[in-house]
Amino acid sequence: MKDDALRFGGVEFATFRLREGVDEKTLLEASENVDREFLAHEEGLLGHVLLKGPDGVYADLALADSQARAEAVCAKWTSNAVALKYIELLDETSVDMTFWERIR
Image (cartoon, rainbow, N blue to C red; front, side, top):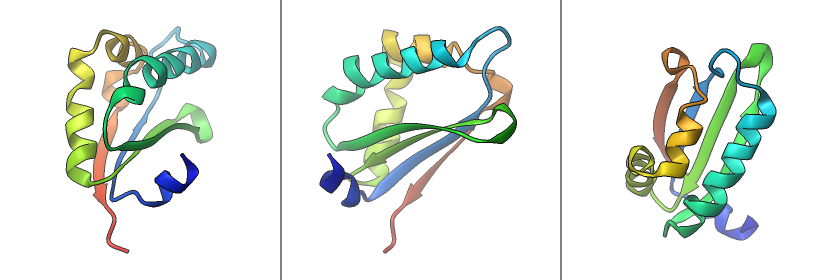
């Protein structure tokens, strides 16, 4: 997967905070379930990581073979039961999602 991730052409990058009462352990478990039961089966998705920043801000980063693929995979989250469980953990007012195209 390391070599595949270096060939990425597009990125989904979302920052968020957890919904009140949700702990990091629950988020990590949900992220592992999303990876195993949903994202591992998506063609063109090269990697998915969860990052932790200061002051309770998290970032969800997905590397795909193109920006269009990153957007297409992201669009499937709301119709996937496992992904919806992950989404329910987020403070929806804090979510900031963007898509990026690799240019070099």
